Length: 114
Length: 111
Figure 1 (tube, one colour):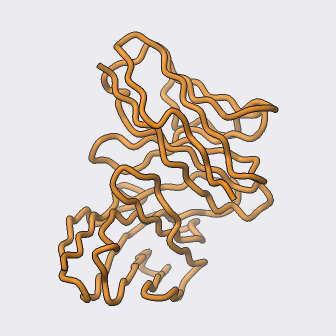
Figure 2 (cartoon, chains in turn green, purple; figure 1 turned 30 degrees about the vertical axis):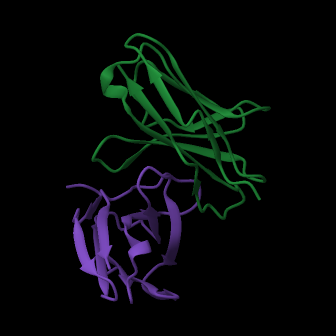
């Protein structure tokens, strides 16, 4: 029973480039959450998505960040024109969406902006 | 005031010790109290959770919630070096909601 999958596990970008982070939820899960963990800080919620819908994006920075969860394929977190402050670990979690909302986390993508 | 406050540690204990990890929270709407364990450079792993006030035991781990004082605890008995990790508390109001994490307590259990 595969868990939450994230790729790439490590991503290096230069300032101004785009970063695309992918998340495939656990089998049978239809809800996806993205969290960010800055160095020496706790996990902070970014966005919550269901298939083809953004439900809560209250934690997303207003500019350069976007997320989607299409009908087919993984959820994508996209960061345009990356800056050094975007360097962090980005974690995806998924839940069933049936009322039992325990969230299970993936291994994370570590983004380094040079 | 942060929604969730957690002693950051680090906490260093000898193998076999009883460990107490604690959080406080401010939002009375929280009904579920999750504990995640995160090994270095890995994703958080759900350890256990409780609903409302009371205790829950799972092997060497006991989670305790006192909603009247908004205080959450995780006890680890007979601690092992393999318990060395960061422990994150995450109160949760249930349903389709985001988790609010404490900063995490880094625990080191030395042989």
